[in-house]
Image (tube, rainbow, N blue to C red; front, side):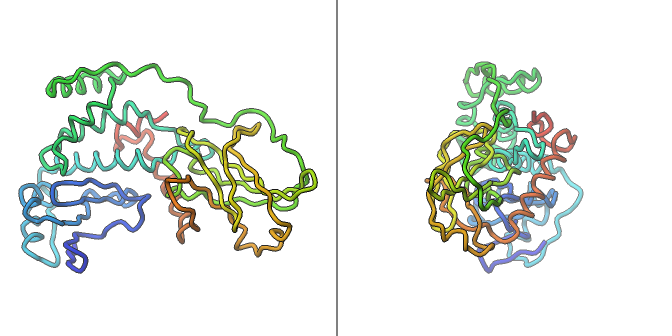
Amino acid sequence: MRVSTSDGLVVGDWPAWPEVTAVLEAAGVVLAWDVLAGDAVPAARVHDPARAAGWLWEIYGSAAGDILAGARDVTVPAAGDWSVRDACRTVAQLDWAQAWWPASVAAEVPALDPVVLRAEHVLALSGVEHLLDDPGAVERALGSVALPTDPDLAGRLSALAADHGIDLSPAPTPARAGFALAAGADTRGGTTVLTGTSTVDWTLVPAGAVDAAAPAEWAVVRREGATVLDVSVVPGPRPGGPLAARFGDVEVTLGEADGLGRVTGSAPVPASVLTLPPDRRVVVVYAPGFAVPAAPAPGAAARQAAVIAYARFRVGSPSATLTERTAR
């Protein structure tokens, strides 16, 4: 692996995009895996070599000493006890899944069970507690979990909670989520003169707020003597926060539900919107207070498609976490 000192001490190739990056903050180091690459060995940014020295060998084996000594290229041995590294990978994978899992009715990617995710996450954390940047992470995480229905997972979680003097309660019976399109029709009416779709940039909305694969739909409509822009998005498994859309200089608040179960909004637009060149006919959906609207980064749609394909593979895969294997 290449070791660079041009931007601090960086081991390996840091993932290029946040939506493919699984991260673990450890003592003196941030570890990162590119979920699409599938590499067992992470990249690392070492900001405190003294703190890292006590445990970095559990991730890189004999190469750890060379990394901290200033080597420019190291070879991580294939053989060794990598149980701690694997546990770190699981923690990072579950954090990635919580932030980026592309639940989608359109792409047939089921939502994750948050009870199972939190339970598996705290169990994985407990296996790497000695190298965490936050010494109270496990105890704090136990305060926000409930006992899952899986007996093996519940038993291991109960034992861990007992070690920390915490009593856990069973998870409440989940209500049926409305993560699907409702039957019905869009009854807003009017004469549609221009339509289009735009990819929703995942970095601009909270995880689960919208369907990860369904595009935002927009239409310029003549309705009751006025020209308006209608925008709609398909909600995801965790809707509820405020959403908005920007089309050129026009802002649209998305807060209504139409007959198809979509989150919609409308705003008046000048007739000159019809003369916009095609490359400017783009609607940017975002969550106010969460992100600032911006055009998608180059290649965003292709990366999102790759992540969706990856998630579909992980569901049911024996190599995946329990949370991913049991997504529903």
